[in-house]
Image (cartoon, rainbow over all chains, first blue to last red; front, side, top):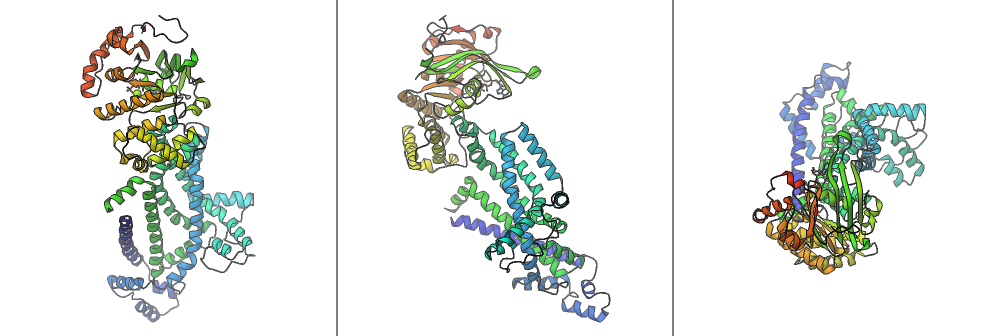
Amino acid sequence: MPKLLLTFLRRVGTSLIVLFGVSILIFGIARIMPGDPARIALGPNATQQQVEALREARHLNDPIHEQYFYFVRELLHGDLGVSLYTKRPVTTDVAQFLPSSLELVFASGLLMVVLGIPLGLLTARYQGRWPDHAGRLMSVIAVCTPAFVWGVILQLLFAYFVPIFPIEGQLSSAMKPPPTVTGFLTVDSILAGNMPTLANALYHLVLPALALALAAIGQTARLTRSSMIEIYRKPYVEMSRAYGFSERKIATRYAFRPALIPTLTVLGLDFAALLANAFLVERVFGWPGLSRYGVEVILRKDLDAIVGTVLIIAALFLICNLIVDLLVSIINPRIRLAEKRAGS
Amino acid sequence: MAEESVLTISDLSLTFGKGRAASQVLNSISLHVKRGEKVALVGESGSGKSVTARLAMGLLQSNKTTISGHIDVAGLDATQGGAAIAAARGRRVTMIFQDPTSALNPVFRVGRIFREVQRTGDESLTPAEMDRRSAEALKAVSIPDPARCLQSYPFQLSGGMNQRVLIAMALINDPSLLIADEPGTALDVTVQAQTLALMHDLTQRKGTAVLFISHNLGVVREFADRVYVIYRGRIVEHATTAQLFSDPRHPYTRALLQAVPKIVKTGLPELPETSPSFLDPLIVHPGCGEPGTVPA
Ligand SMILES: Nc1ncnc2c1ncn2[C@@H]1O[C@H](COP(=O)(O)OP(=O)(O)OP(=O)(O)O)[C@@H](O)[C@H]1O
Ligand SMILES: [Mg+2]
């Protein structure tokens, strides 16, 4: 088994190299963008001396490779620098805004799996019949419409014309947020034992999570369907029918498990893509997540904040992929055993 | 004597597609297998052997097929497929496939598939009982280390081992009919011969009736009591094995027999050249009529 661990560590190593590349790229791009961050931060009324002083203090006059060296040195101490916009450490800012975004993304990811996969199984099982046609049509519509458009549509339908859900925000203003432990409103409500807050938070989560998830649900359904149809043609499925396995058992287990192997890889990418799509959905629903911060800092050319935010998102992306790789090797015995054999 | 037969097919015709795209692949075929009997269905590639087998299992019936005639499996009407025959699959009737390696699900352990197969037979068995029965069944097909085999994934076993596993699975619920569709043709000739001998012995001991599908007359000679020869969706000759080999009457059967030596050498059949006489009417040898019809 230590070989499996070693393989895992090797992938972690590769991810770190990727992260290093991303950091150089975003570090360079942030500095190539036009505009003087010090001038933007201090405003039009600041004197040239003040601007110069700030530039000097933030090493902005040094050659770019030296700047990068300072950046890496701070990074190794767990420090992403200070935002010129909020005047706070970037890590503090990210720690404040990221949990709300992640809460939204996790909720969408959950919807993607619990709605997308069953829809895929259903359409595959009734291939060529009406549930298939209906399911595929819905999937295509879901995939073709951008998430922020879904946001607006859902707001209009379920918050405006038929006001079932709140139109925006994360919690009703009358509600007192629970003490911050994890930063996840739902989790903190549970930890505080505050069920009304939890209900209210979930109620606010429904529309943005659905808006963000719809395209991914459609994508997952389509992927699951095509993967299942391919597996349904395999001799071992006919064998399982010939040996009396029920259609239900075939759909949910015997054909599903092998069909999941190719699906899971793409699912992981789709899940990671939710992070990026969340930016626009957060805008539409006034969700206090990382998007608001991200857009502000980009417009203000807030160098440390831009680089920090991008690096955190890239790291989350890579972690996602690592988890998916691990899951795939768990459900695919060929991979698992190949790695074991290589180790023994 | 209908209850004597575990499989009775009468006047069965099958057409794929509708209207102009329709293609008829079975043309009013009749055959039967009596309890404990070994019957072979022999013909060249594309003659309709597999579709017959899959119809009998109720696996081919769909909105793309038009079926007329009648199929009776172990007393059940399987003509239009449906729930009755589906419930009998895995218990009263099972099937062995051509390629054992692709017939086993690669992401489940052999032991797990074995359990699933037994569950369709008897819901009340505990996992431990099922594993014990699986191990016994594997021993009966000469698998040296059953416990280890049950722990393995199909791709960790050889083709011959997989074939034995499938034979053991097919027989573990004591079906009254086993349909073997060119079993092991994908395997090496000697391995194929070994596993066929195993299957033959085991079904003989258990008294399982077998519909044995093959294009290899040499193999049929060793294992079958009776033979149906099929050509382009029609049964052309029906005889006991002894009658067929000593006195082949239909031109197509003769052509097939002439191809036998080549089959033994390469494992692949040399197609007999076509001739209009291959479409001559059915020849039934004395004593071989279908049940309920007047012997020819
Ligand atoms: N799903 C299908 N749709 C249309 N035609 C089919 C279908 N399945 C089989 N056929 C046709 O039916 C005919 C008989 O096929 P079948 O598979 O029974 O042949 P076979 O005798 O088993 O041949 P082989 O020895 O190659 O396995 C073939 O002409 C084939 O093209
Ligand atoms: Mg065939």
